[in-house]
Length: 235
Figure 1 (cartoon, rainbow, N blue to C red):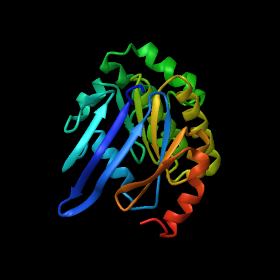
Figure 2: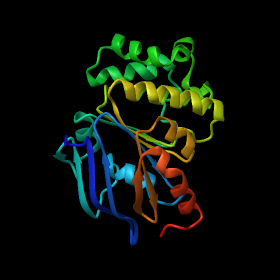
Figure 3: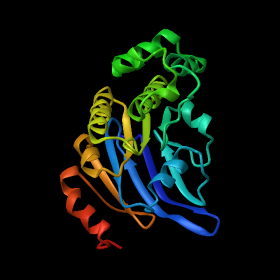
């Protein structure tokens, strides 16, 4: 069996004295899309923060492509191929679309390659390239955040609530692009409230409740489990 791109083992994390992650176990196979689902407060976003080095775990292990990375800083993880699109739209509102993208060239990727990658996935950004990012629609800002992440050529992409505050048609468009990204071989772990939308592009799914992963499986196995979790049927 090949080494997974991401393996989380018995991971614990807390905000002060309040434990939020209570022994999380999770695997993301290479080249797969894993949807991480569950109700609000289950610990999904906290898990992404710990994996991406934005928050320290209290115990447990994290392996990225077989390398032990628990406690690594975000810049170290980025050099290993991990890229995160956090909850909310992390764009520079007073810069144009093109200037937002060109900032990624400081990481060593040629500016022309950065722009080609972004515009090939999101032609609408090319149309808006001279527009200030802060004046884009919410969906266009999310496209820009995702495009910036892709220019770093990630091995593992963490997506946190792409759909937040967006109309269903825009969410469908974004996830269609996420599916295209996955077909290029990028591994993806996506946290999403719209379970059906995420499951459409997922190879596997995991359900969190109460700070633990309570179920894993293929997308068609997860629907009834999600209903149980939301209704309190899974402890």
